[in-house]
Image 1 (cartoon, rainbow, N blue to C red):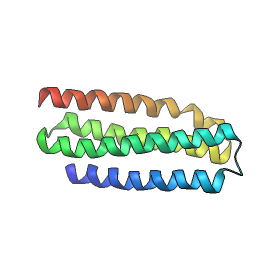
Image 2 (cartoon, one colour):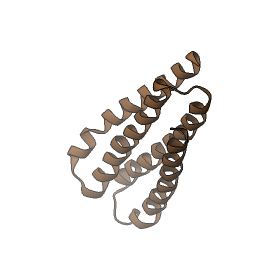
Image 3 (cartoon, rainbow, N blue to C red):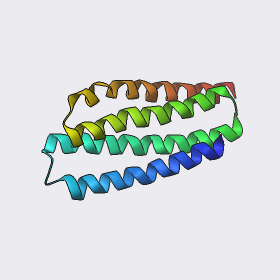
Image 4 (cartoon, rainbow, N blue to C red):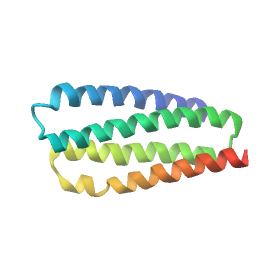
Length: 122
C-alpha cells in the first residue's frame, strides 16, 4: 500500500498544481472572484492531502495495518469528494455539487484522526 499511496499522492499533487495554474490563468477572466476563490480552495486542499498521502505512504512502511490504510483511503475519498465537488461546482454552477463538499471534509478529518491513531498504536 505504501507505493500505491505515494503514487496517488504524487499524481494528486501534480493535478493540484495543474488545477491551480488553470484557475489562475484560464479561469480568472471567466469566473467571478468568489467562484475563483472556491476553485483555489479546492486546489489548495487537494495539495494538502496529496502531501498527507505521501506521509501515509511513509507511515505505512513503519506501522502497516488497516488503520493507516483506512487513513490513506479517507484522504483519497476526501480529495475526490471535497476538491472534486468544488471543481465541479465552480465549472458548472450547479449548487448540488457544493452540497456534498462537507462529506469530503469529514473524510479528511477522519483520515487525520486515523493517521494519529496509527502513529500512537504503531
